[in-house]
Amino acid sequence: MYYIRENAKAILEENVAKYNRFKELNLKLDMSRGKPCVEQLDLTNGIFDVFSSKDIPIGSQDYRNYGIIDGIPEAKELFGALCGVEKDEIMVLGNSSLTIMYDTLQRAMQFGVDGNLPFNKQEKIKWLCPVPGYDRHFAITELFGIEMINVPMLNDGPDMNVIEEYVENDSAVKGVWCVPKYSNPQGIVYSDETVIRFAKLKPAANDFRIYWDNAYMVHHLGKDVPLLNLLQEAKKYGNEDMVYMFGSTSKISFSGSGIAFMCASKHNIDSLKKLMFFQMIGPDKIAQYAHVKFFGSVENLLKHMDKQAELLKPKFKVVSDVLNKELKELCQWVEPRGGYFFGVDLPTGTAKRTVELCKEAGVVLTEAGATYPYKNDPNDTSIRIAPSMPSIDDLTKAMEVFACCVKIAWAEKEVEKE
Ligand code: PLP
Image (cartoon, rainbow, N blue to C red; front, top):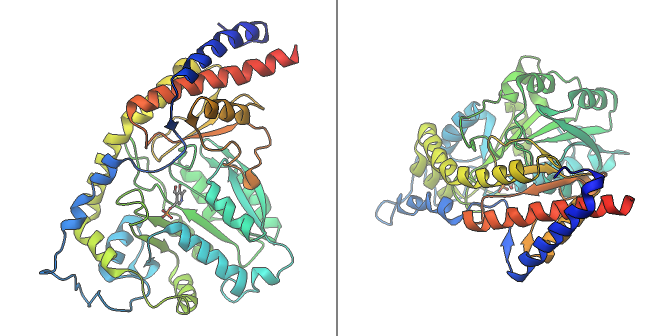
């Protein structure tokens, strides 16, 4: 049946009947969490065997002791190679890249960026937010009272005309959040042209920085999709100080018990380290050394990610199959080539209602609007689906419920208009 207003009543009736049958099943399913499943975590269990009390993890210095604020040399070498940067362009730190991003912005607020006036002392601070995007990024900028500006995501990254217009003409614009590879939530990879246009920006503000959160740099589902290295590109235009790059092993090894890193120009790293001195004496070097021992090389780490992909691929296929079979006429999405999510655009004005219907039927989705600054999706259209955690059977059932709810939400609206 076509999804046109004339058919809305019949579609509503058919799907409400189906929905009531789903409700009788008392389902408890969750597609909201972008967490690795148990089988993915199990892939890293060998890290518990990389040393014992007989083989104390001393490394090139005694890693049981204080010190080495920017990470152990072995970890800088491994993750520097992974990120395509030199050893003096990376700091390997604690267990979370989000913490590094928060700290970096907090320092900018309180102490300023590289000798500039602290953001807190400047009249107005604005931040560019490609949408839909990562809710935790937006939560940080909202917490600091920074004005967030939506920038539409296109199929090859954010709309660069909008980015250039703001960055090059408004000195209150101090930053932009980017997830350049397999973006959260749409799984989009920035094209070469997009990366080069970022690298070439001529910001109106000296203290403008690109927050390049490469959280999914090795999280391909099929063939890897290459991404240009922003720091190296920016160097070609003398713009290397404009770039902060972040990453972690949260979805490579253990989420929350992995290690995180930040890459930047040597100048920026030196400037950041001066303030970090007041915050800590050194990161958890045992965790860093364990990761180095476990992965050994970039090549091995990539093989490990192939195994992760084998576990995730069938789950992504379930979501894709249901979307294609049931919702092609009503929804729009990009087939993700990696990462952890599907970003789906529902008919205008139906995302909140769909999430509510799903919840009543026992299927938890990420809150509608969460992928927009201030949780305000102006068209109430964007939904994030996280397929990694549930089993294939649960996911299949949850997607059936989801498809039914999208149709109900659409049909209710059409019937209302009559
Ligand atoms: N950045 C993005 C884009 C994410 O999706 C996530 C987690 O979902 C994170 C950062 C969190 O990273 P970490 O665990 O290193 O703090």
